[in-house]
Image 1: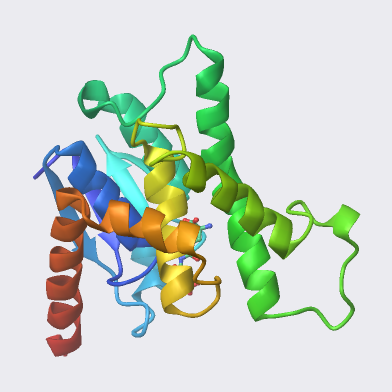
Image 2 (image 1 turned 45 degrees about the horizontal axis):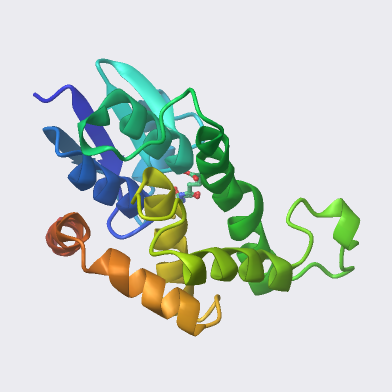
Length: 210
Ligand SMILES: N[C@@H](CCC(=O)N[C@@H](CS)C(=O)NCC(=O)O)C(=O)O
């Protein structure tokens, strides 16, 4: 058994970590969790992730949850493919900003728009401020350079890029040219394509399971 085990539902947010594992290139095993059959709420899985959510990555017996944390961890732990900006430069701070921007701003902005509150919250109360500003900040960055950290592809592109990609597919994020071009650069990556092919096979296997 590999040191790394991904608890995964195909396709779901854990597909982001599947892509990240392909970028990292270390051996890993996958344990498929069926959300439709409620396997994520069974005691056995709750012992691994008490939130009952995927992904969970287990590394050497230690469970790590939250996809942005998992991607940050993998990039630091396996530095050979230069998917992180190392500690010791202010660029590291900017890199972390983008990793936190997904769960802190992009995802809540998209979900709030998809499931609006009865009484809209004031801009100042929302960590992301407003939807359009959140989108503009990302669009400005990816229009300036191929990746969020300039010429360096990093874990931040996996986290934000995957969200933009799925958000556009589900019509929850506007198909702006900046996003379409950026996502096309990401999808062209071999690791992303490998992850996608594996995910399709995982989904088919899950469908045919009784
Ligand atoms: N904050 C978590 C969210 C994970 C999440 O919501 N995963 C969904 C799949 S896309 C899930 O496990 N849903 C099952 C459920 O809540 O019952 C992360 O970023 O990893």
